[in-house]
Amino acid sequence: MGPDELFQRAVIARRYYLEGRTRVQIAEEFGISRFKVARMLDEALGSGMVEIKIHNPGSIDVELSTALQRRYGLQHAYAVMTSPDSDPRGTDTVGADDRVASVAKAMAELLQSILRDGDVIGVDCGRTLAHIADHITELPHCDVVQLTGMAGAITHNGVDLVRRISEVSGGQTWPLYAPLVVSDARTAASLASSQQIQDTIAQHAKVTCAIVSVGAWVEGASQVYSSLTTTEVEALEAAGVCAESCALLLDAEGNRLPGLDDRRMGIDEATLREIPTVIAIATGPEKIAATRAVLRSGMVSSLVTDVEIAAAVLDDNADEEGAKRT
Image 1 (cartoon, rainbow, N blue to C red):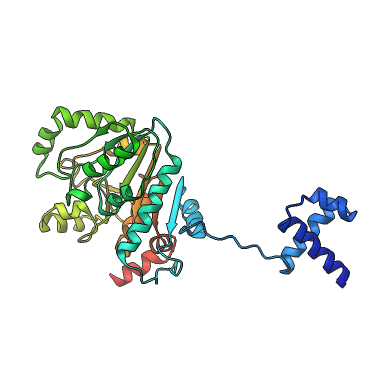
Image 2: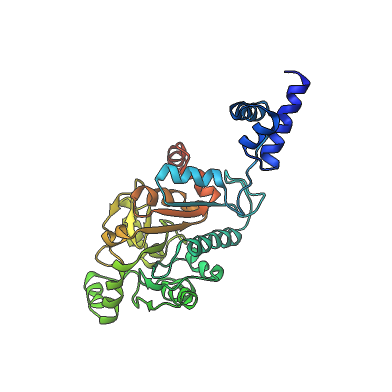
């Protein structure tokens, strides 16, 4: 191709990509067909004369997020970078607090973009989940329902998060004043018979958007784990428990395990699966296997997580490598 043709290609590319001209307008200007314009634009891209770079929006890794969405058939998937220097393969050295804040902020932004007047928000408990309210500035009018009982510090339980979200949404609150896990089935049945808890549980079927935690079966990574005795934890681990969400136990393949079903206080599995949008939140490398299990379970329809977890749950070799390390 001669210099004149190269020059014309460059000018046509500039008209199209920088000046916003249509192919028809360019064809008229240069006296050529729009099909030739299209071919020259393709050649400009193919030859490297034109390079298109799409920047990630804010802290979201678009490539990882799209891969997550496709792999697991998700409605929404955010793989969140904690800082511009974060390595999406998990070698970043940012602090855990920064990671939690970034993922919680992304979750808050997602909620603010998808919720509409009249939606009903369901809220699980969890340490990362609790930080969402710090970043919610505006919501449509929505009622807020607690999905699970209380566990951990007051600032990490569902009652406090329900209150804080409803202060922004202006909707009615439906708290669940009960422990997340109780000592035995009789105690659970007795608590469930109270009118206040029955009223809240009746609202679970009305939830249109639920936000839930991913709990890993290790110390400090699950409110359920922390609510049990060492003997109970070890017995459930021996039974194959790898993860939990809303105190619903899962093995590594995402299969449900019934170990606490008669002792947990919260939304039942069938009702959770009927909610149109269920968004899980997870941060930290200790939750990689648990996040994969929750995704495999099909109980959630969306995920907001950090880039390390996102990359790991997309890695087909991660399970094998994890087994070798164990």
